[in-house]
Image 1 (cartoon, one colour):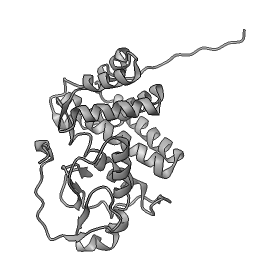
Image 2 (image 1 turned 120 degrees about the vertical axis):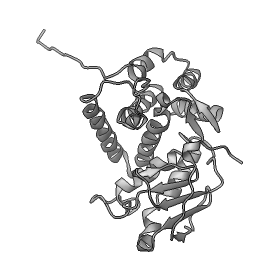
Image 3 (image 1 turned 180 degrees about the vertical axis):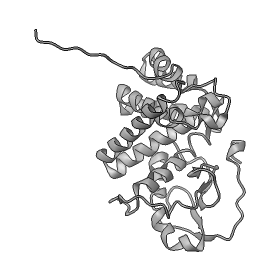
Length: 272
């Protein structure tokens, strides 16, 4: 068997309709929904198999023997239980107005599905060693969902996704000056904030831009392989990046991960 984190264990009991898509290629896929969602489930979850394929190719083989997507009871938009993701009961009813041309479904749903599937690698298979390392789960899931949107919806959609992420970070920073690697917040649910999610995603985007896709993704694969079915720290991830790139990233991590806030520049100009 494959070990999973205790917080990712779940037992689901309910009056479900089970659907099995025919296009699944990476792992057996199944959808458990209410009777009222049955007619929409195959289309609504149609991004699941492409997300599984992309992350399997980008990061490593899917870590579990199957994947069930469940519309059920959760206090979150989605909960990344290992191999049995539970989505909020309103996933298919609170629909965005903008429809994805790639899948014929709202982009908001697409991002949530990709986010929770990315967690199967980041958070479930490789789990943060401490709660201060939560961004290794939530920041990664947020950014890899963005990378999925970039590949399947295009650069403009990706840029919009990242702009929205930046706006969330700036808004949060007005309320709290804490770092991504936060050892001071005692309320663990308080760590489910824009630092762990959106700022973590932006840190990954900046690293990808600084190192280039080839080195960045090689570092991510090496990091994943070294720590799958185990725990990892922020320093473990930094070490993987430094080995792959040959660069010292200590200053970058100190500024963006271990310190709070973001740079603010004052500029002056004049004629010479």
